[in-house]
Image (cartoon, rainbow, N blue to C red; front, side, top):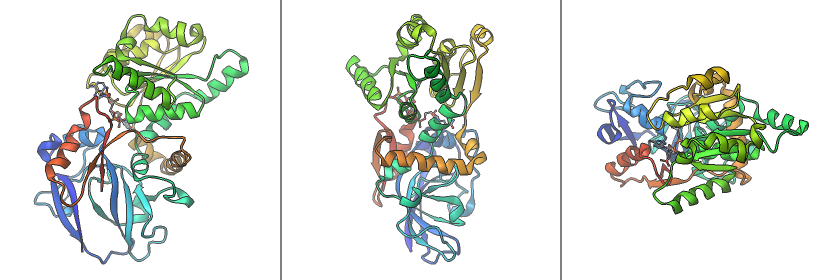
Length: 378
Ligand code: NDP
């Protein structure tokens, strides 16, 4: 028997209050079509905490199947797992393969999982080359943040065409621009890198750190990733910003700013609205400030702006094949050293790790000013 542990919750609330560790054992005889997997690396994303709090867009169903005293749910949507053993009839997976959940809501905050109908629920990592040249951290964090950045840069404004047209006409001073707040988030760092690889230019907004030196260090770090411009939230919210945008970066306003990615909300989002060029699009995908934003009416009307909401889970359900293709494309970029995983704060989860350490790691996710995303390593 395999001894396994999982973080579970039976009611909504703060992770530190409602999570507990559930221990169970998994029989060595696997049902047909099933696969036993063990966790190698599992990140905790903001959405996982919102799910535990009961504030996320879908509410999970508490289930008696885990054998907990009360019906419960395992949180977690992504992670890198290794196949330990496979049941009869499983053709596409073998022990040693690395897999990731094929859909959201898998419940990844656990040491092991017995996965029924495994070939549907799991995606083998990396196509023909499998896990070669990849790390568990890269694989564990590929399917949410980089995929979100990829879609938002490609599906709302054709920035690549805009760049090509601009160069062809000789009107552009460089690749097409996009602007984003929350630029040091996992999604933001992915957008910076993909943008750079696709020949785009980016204006990136980050919150000031504790000291000017730390702020400069963060700006430098993002520029090394491929950011064209990095400004602090204070610089961004200053009245002078729209003029600077024209004078310093967009060629007197001749290079349009057609896409803004909004991770934060509040005043910061309102400033994106003011910064966009006519017919520009603001895509909202997060609300880290927990503030909704005043839509300035004038710019909305006179610039004929578009406002869109992005939700990866829904996109993935509608486009399962494209999602797999995109994941392998990004993994290939990682393998070639063209794309870096976001910084992680690793938390070791072994048999002796105390429950409190695991719960605290989840609780800390939304704290802000972190050195990296919390990732359990096993
Ligand atoms: P990370 O954990 O990697 O980063 C968190 C980011 O939020 C940091 O940039 C942090 O900045 C910022 N932040 C934290 N608190 C605040 C605050 N009070 N005000 C302003 N900024 C704050 O996050 P992810 O990249 O995983 O996710 C970022 C957002 O995107 C989340 O809201 C998440 O839910 C959302 N998301 C949405 C998806 C979708 O499909 N809609 C898909 C993926 C993510 P600092 O360092 O200054 O604290």
